[in-house]
Length: 124
Image (cartoon, rainbow, N blue to C red; front, side):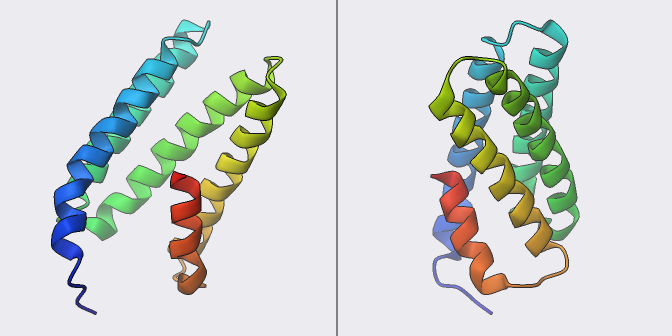
C-alpha cells in the first residue's frame, strides 16, 4: 500500500543509519576486548550500510541487517552483563529481546500490526 510519508522516511533513513553507526562505533571503543570491539564496530557499520541500501532493496537487505544487528546487540549485552550497571543490564536484555521479536515477526510476516509498535519501542 502506498504511504504518503514514504518520501520522508527515505530521506531520514541515511541520517538515522549514520547516527546509529556513530553510536555503535563509539560504544565499541569502550569495550575492553579488542576482538569484541571490532565485531561490534564492523557488524554495526555493515548493518547501517545495508540499512541505507534497504531504501531500494528492502527484502534482500533485511536478513543481512537483522543478523548483523542481533550479533552487535548480543556482544553489547554480554559486556553489559559483566558490568555492575544493573539498569543497563535490564535495558540491554529488553533491547535484545525486542530486536529478536521484530525479526521473528518480520520474516514470516505475522503480527504486522504489532511489528511497527515493537520497532518504535526498540528504537526508543
